[in-house]
Image 1 (cartoon, rainbow, N blue to C red):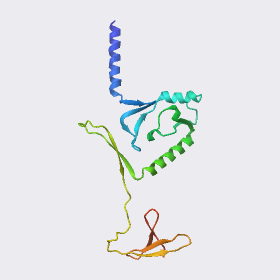
Image 2: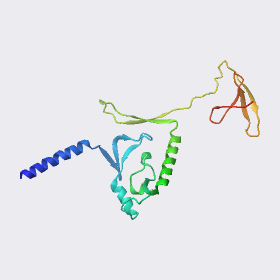
Image 3: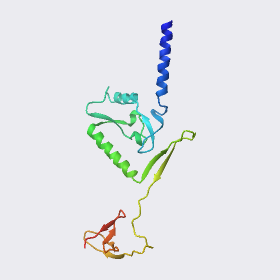
Amino acid sequence: MKNIKDFLSVLAILAAFTFSNAQSTYTLGSTEYIYGAYYSTTGKPKVVRSTANKNAFLKSKGYTSTPYGYEIDHIVPLSEGGSDDPSNMQLLTVNQHKAKTARERTKRAKLNSSSVYRVNTPNYYSTSTVEHTKIKYTRPNYRPDKSSKQTTKSTKYHSSTHSSRAIQTGPRGGRYYINSNGNKTYVKR
């Protein structure tokens, strides 16, 4: 009887230690998310990767483990709101997976080049929930101000390599035009 009581007390201590260190999560469908954790690149909730879902995917393909030279990829990335469901998984070779990841990062960088995600976490005494704000940054305008004392002369420039562009002469005599990105491109004399 004493051994059972000792065993139960040790088990209770282990259970208390395990639950005190565990992060609180919530589940939507077959995907489990971590409360208060967000991907820094997109601001979407962080996903807990499920071993059971991975094994179910491999079993549906006739495997017990990931084949040599292959990796499991999420078709819609988890950081962009994809689920950790077997229907969102595919087998790719290591090189294919690296290339796909690079394409996704490049695409994300282009989409977010003028945006920064910031997570406003509540302070210690706050009871509000976590809010996401997307800050939009705009590119500064480098075109001369019309009220400025510096004047520029504008002429039309025709060339076989360039379409018709308005060439301007700056205050020091440099000749330039404004390219499609809004930047000055100087013309050789």
